[in-house]
Length: 315
Length: 159
Image 1 (cartoon, helix red, strand yellow):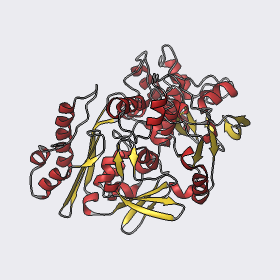
Image 2 (tube, chains in turn purple, orange; image 1 turned 180 degrees about the vertical axis):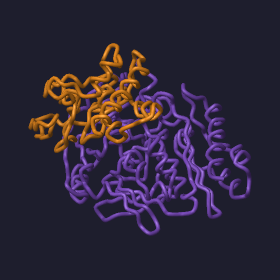
Image 3 (cartoon, chains in turn green, brown; image 1 turned 90 degrees about the horizontal axis):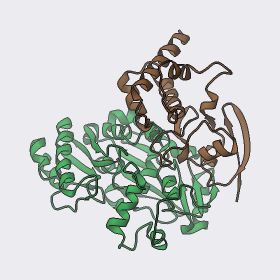
Image 4 (cartoon, chains in turn red, green; image 1 turned 120 degrees about the horizontal axis):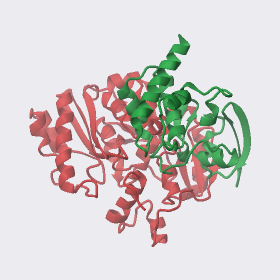
């Protein structure tokens, strides 16, 4: 029996119901193997476990195993998915113990958050509270105490659940994502990072290393609000807004299958519209998600309501 | 391929060979025979499996035993000091903080995390902190009274 409070199962159903036909999905090979897929396994498949002591060793292991491995950090997205056998990697590479990757550093022009920083670490970081309040606020709204204690920002965005809280916040913050690979590292603009449901710009053999939040006027005046699914606390609608210095960035998660910035709303805000007026055009023309929690029409209405509230806080 | 893990549980060191896919909660219950930590929903929702890992509340159904390598785990079995109940356990007893008792170990471990960060939480703060713990007897009122009682006992003891 499927219960409503199981976020990972819900995600799985989203894949099955909405996107089963699309071949390039991360989990499609497993779903296809199991035509009569029943969510009954609650123990992961057999797996080998590796604990590299630095990121170089982790990258070596990744190039050795190719697509037969997964990176494990807090495990709060991956382990539930493995328990449902939606993922069954042969090898796990546990990077949670790599000290460099947990650091949050307060630089002159930005704050760099290591991919293995936990949501709880981020929520209580004073530099983040000061320079990008929406980042700290969203971190404190994810899941529950236990999840925030061990779930990591890198793990969450690499998993790219459309109803997670980080995507909208990082889109609004104009974050940069640093990805390491055998050849060195590369930086991806957040606008190019989320590619679709559970899909990101991180390629095979690469590790998401850190997230950089610029210290800008708009980030200093920012907030995140969400309408949580009553049991799972995943976002039915999540809206992050950052307004300042003649700029406005407004982003949503939970509304469409890929988190997005709403440039119509941003332009209205910059053009001098009130919060209420700017919010009327939220998600116009977008393919809004519909499921048994919220129809597309209701989600779109609620997205406007939450955008108005969020904009009201910062305008 | 089994791997060797060593970790401390309730102050005692253990070294065991485990299959990497073993969840921490199953390691505690089946390998160490500490069945005080319960498995409820098995989907990181209900909080019945909450233990402390380095003094932070964790849903032990959502961590592999090998991830706990080198860390300190505290379970409900580690709360009492001999025959003297921990103030939280005593308070749940006094305030009728349990009905069927299934959620109680998780409630107590999560409350221990809360009180270690906030010695005197408000009722609202307690309710927020218990967000990840379900009581299907719906006995939340008395659970909250129990935690308030324990907070008072523990603050009095440290003055």
